[in-house]
Image (cartoon, rainbow, N blue to C red):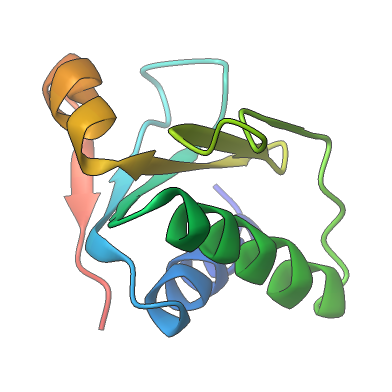
Length: 115
């Protein structure tokens, strides 16, 4: 694992927190999946907030030189997925987060504390 990837995950977590996201979780999925090394998971209270969180992540990470590979779900704003390669950010409406429950699905992942 590179320090750069961990720093990217922390920057993404900071970006969602800047937009007042709820229940921010960072999962270390290294060795559990080839999808990514980290998932950043959070919730927004409305479609507008979900989009604002997604925009905030894109902008903050772009300023730090990270290029987004893809983004899905933005228009519906119920579950927005931002793929930065080694870090994937999931921004949910609360109902979708409870339904998909990624924290349970990836229950073997180590949860990082973000200070």
